[in-house]
Length: 164
Image (cartoon, rainbow, N blue to C red; front, side):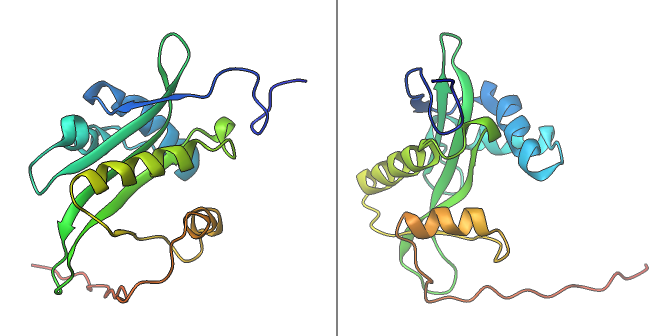
């Protein structure tokens, strides 16, 4: 049977801690989904999550890698926060992505589950994230992982441009 995104003939990717050197691959995966390459932004985000980071609270950073060269095919990043409006400390998933050719193979679920295990080892029993309401694929993924609407509503305000 030929290899496809849903039926692969090789071993499942390994999950390992994120490293600063993973930033370019993560930026490429993100660009494949968003259409925008944000190399410098991802370099900074990955650097903060490599090694579990401590600035701004404990962090979780994981990648899924495959092959002898350890090609990055997916990532998850999160951090522990005590949210500003009286929320208890909880884990936040701030980034999750899988290479487009590897979708629907369980990689995101494995990354997410390992992130939750790492949050639990830090004494965290609740995980949150934020998703665009029109991103049906990502919403479906998180719903399938057991997420439900939380007690908070995200609000926003566009600030008009001002001239000095």
